[in-house]
Length: 369
Image 1 (tube, rainbow, N blue to C red):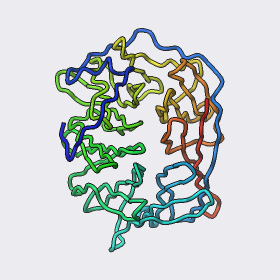
Image 2 (cartoon, rainbow, N blue to C red; image 1 turned 90 degrees about the horizontal axis):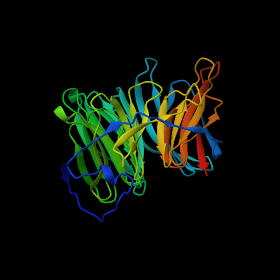
Image 3 (spheres, rainbow, N blue to C red; image 1 turned 45 degrees about the vertical axis):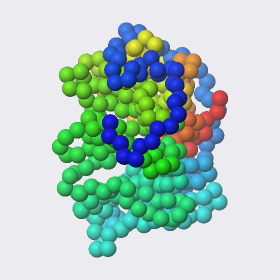
Image 4 (cartoon, helix red, strand yellow; image 1 turned 45 degrees about the horizontal axis):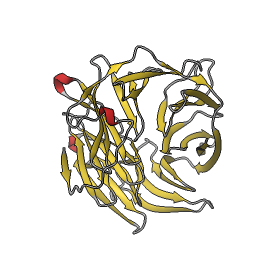
């Protein structure tokens, strides 16, 4: 593990995952022959909110973050040939007031792209890319200043994905050749850590309450699953997946780890640390659920399931606490889903009129017990 400016803090014991953490010695896992059959229950109480944007021809709404009553978002302009030439990082407050915080555009008016908007600490982060460079940039909300924290030459062909919680930012850096690497930034003190230089799957390293998780390639040993406590610089789980288990993504916090296998509409497994097993979550009691996107949210997994055949658009909620299954119908197909808090999910939908004016809607759901 490579570190820059890394300091150690106190020790936090994660009881539910500790059984799989054995220092550098990875614990082999098996797949349980029995799935966890989820039983149907009423959906949790939920409050919804919506923020609307009118976008004339030539403008788009990019990624966004719902943080309390404030929405941070990217809004940009593109040419008739769909080339992005300008992107503004903006804020909209509860009263509807909008403010442009920072604008990205080339002096020559050339093509560029902004993506991966995140919020960690009091800083916004995003990926900037043009024909010369790919960089991770940040905007300090307190100081009103923007800066690049990492810059890579464009010829490296690097693909970056970001994730964050209230304190930490992670990014996966995938070059055209070679294994992807995973880094983490602690916004509290500016420390950067390289967690892995052999990622086994190019995905987002989600962060929950100072905990991130990832898959890595370990040669003849196969694929490893790591749950890492960024706050206390220690592994909470270090496991080896079964040889024929095609894991593609993992999300974890201090209490749970959930793994997706394959690209089908089933294949979510939770880690039973005491037994050293991966056990499939069986949500077949609600036919038609599709894994367009899925999000670990505290004691539940939320699935954004788009309509298909005779099945409607809906949000499915899989309870890890009491093995329950519930769902909520949706009026629109949602995209760009994001779970920033254990009780909040946000996404977007849009429509266009006959004049080409697009109405983009950011909708959020706040759940309660």
